[in-house]
Figure 1 (cartoon, rainbow, N blue to C red):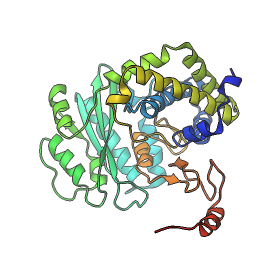
Figure 2: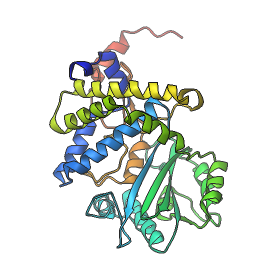
Figure 3: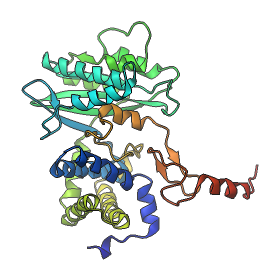
Figure 4: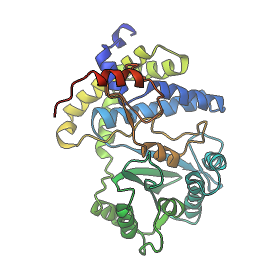
Length: 349
């Protein structure tokens, strides 16, 4: 198995532009240090790799998270004993009153209250902040949908000018029962989730009219095709155990490379590569599943990370949304070395 997963450096570099294993390892070990069980961390890694394969190898958007609605009316990750709100509260306490994290905490409590009151659909916007220079020009709609005892959070991305929030205002106006009034800000959107009383069909029509596509049938079809392969299961198991047990990163990228190539083949066989656009990469900073981390990671703090402008190495093209310091994690060139290299490079008009 190990020999098969030793991929050429070019393949490892290509995968590393989308999936940061070092950040993944840091994140999952912070979970273990917080007392999260190994079984729960393994579930996180399975979900994260699955999303990576669909979104990057096949261009299929499958960004959704499923929560359990407890008898106490609180939302939980599957098999977790503490409500998700605990992570929001921890992050809000660290950031202080008036912070975005504080708005996220209060907004989450409002989402919980809506489902406690019988809501079937709750929508919340997470636009970029004008005051945050690291935020890019796009935002997210979180569509929380009741499905039995589960709440599925569909995460929908949209383009947005952070200096005007025009798109966010349009989306809120279209989806809310009345147009937003007064000052319209990212903080207001986080604080005030929209309880939508439309049935699912009407809500889907409204979302479609705004350009959102939440059809996941194709993603489910492709996912089944990938994980029906026994080698895919073996590579996934090797990756999960390797991340948790400190395996060499080249071996780990080898597992991801095998899975990536398999996913592309399955997607091509099912016709996905012809009919679906390439997705915008959403997976950075240890993955896309917001499990409680050292800073109290949540679906909102996840979005905050995704809204950041990425670091892109001018030398090798490596991309990361995680701070990298003065050295590229991929080619190891430093800022000073790049400055010297650029100084000696002729630039044509």
